[in-house]
Length: 272
Image 1: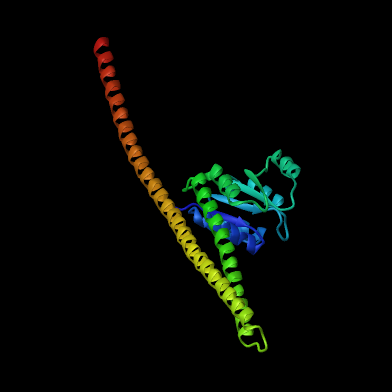
Image 2: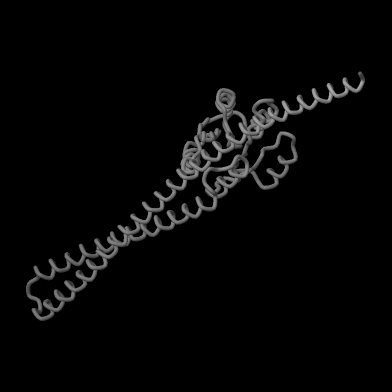
């Protein structure tokens, strides 16, 4: 099945990159235009399944561009989603009353689920939205846990360094109580061993989390792959059904023609 293509008209490179990454994961192709002129030109030059249009643009704002799209006989057929960081809910509600309204509206910054759900409602999506979002949430949760572990691991390494400094300092001291020094050395070594043990456990857990993240990302890729295959199979079956339908319609037309001819002959015989 051909990948669906989305035009993103957005002046913020950071935000457009954020959108591109999300859409790529669910099988969409993307083209970015940084302003209205390039956006209109791209829409006339290429074929798009959907347009994501930011209200906050240089030169002309998105509301004016939306009007231009919806008044163009060819471009108005493309579903369009308006995005804005400054618009209030009431602004969107007012715009929905116009003839040149968008097909949907999103308040920036939006989360992945909102964007994918909005697009899916208008043009469909190769990957089921609930499954995609569940996998995304799992990955994000694991990455957060991994970051915490890495931070904790660095803290433990710092503590080990400090304990070693204490050992060196205690060992190099003179005129000290030997018994007290021995006890301090033993206690410091014990603390170091415990910290090393904890650090090793953290490292192992960190490795396990990395494996889990890889597994989930692999699962997402397989999901996209299988979904695309399902769509391709469905398209093939749909094509076969259309061929059969065309053949049956042709047969029906021929039969009607034959029946008409028989009736005409019968009527002609009666008249004679």
